[in-house]
Amino acid sequence: MAARTALTDHLPAGLDYLVACSGGPDSLTLAATAAHLKSEGVLQGRVGAVVVDHGLQPGSDEVAADAGEKCAELGLSPVIVQRVQVPGTGNEADARQARYEALEEIRAEVGADYILTAHTADDQAEQVLLSLARGSGTRALAGIPEHRGRMLRPLLGITREQTHAICDGLQLHPWHDPTNDLPDARRNRVRHELLPVMREVLGNGVDDALVRTARLARQDADLLDELAQQTLATAAVQDDPSVLGGVDDRVEGRAPLVWDLRRQVVLEAPAALRSRVLRQVAVAVGGKPPTAERTAALEKLTAGTGAPGPVQLDGRVSVTRIRSEDGESLLRFRGL
Image (cartoon, rainbow, N blue to C red; front, side, top):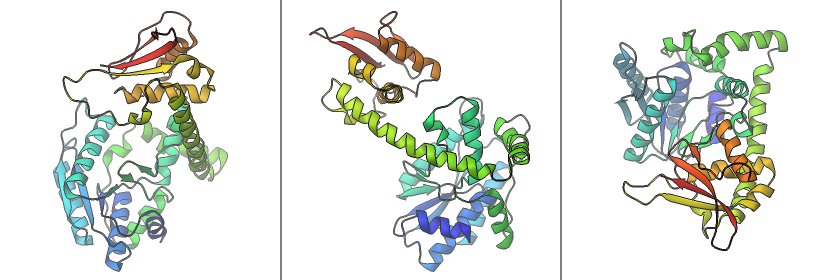
């Protein structure tokens, strides 16, 4: 079956995995396929499951318990059902953050190598359209990555229709999340309204074209990110730019993180690299990826026009244009 091929192509045999399972058709397909490969000895490490109960719907505890039972019946072990507190307003983004934090915490506790999630080609097509609507750049158009940190998404090459068919064929009885039908959710409107119209107008191949766009954009974005790192290594005043991406372990009371860049080096870089360098350093000192509006403000600061700052970024980061002791113009990123 397509899911079997997807897992054998993407998962090293000797590692330990935890399947993130909601009980829906996509994640049940993933759980059943992983369990089958484990029973055949194709996957040689431990293969377990994690069910996260967000507690946002009546009866969510029963749904989570049922999903856990299904995973255990399939032969996955260990099976962990975890209730989480969703911060903020309880919207989709808040729930995702709480879920991913819980998944990583449980992965570390049981010593698994990776969490497997059941995103499909349909999710990828929807993500590309949502990114297009926001006027996003290449990285966002790359959509959902197959691999990020300790998360693997082996089903990105198969469709939601296929996962439903697999569940039917295996006589599994998945749960259908009622929030997937809410008319006020943007992703749901893309799924139920926009994509059907696009298929009617552009043909049924539009989904495959969107997935292909994501794959091609990812190749370009990966190369541009690598080139941006090289530019950063030249622009950085600090001797060791390798700390980028590893500064989330700041402790209370520690001095603010400061990162200085040679402004002229950044200014002379091609626009696609310059914007990446500015975003990378903003994140490196503890901030969030700047919005298009904040990135434009950083570009203006880099160009040397207007006030020397500070430009304030989300995550308590400020950026100013300063002069070094020898008179060189620098961009100082300061994470508070």
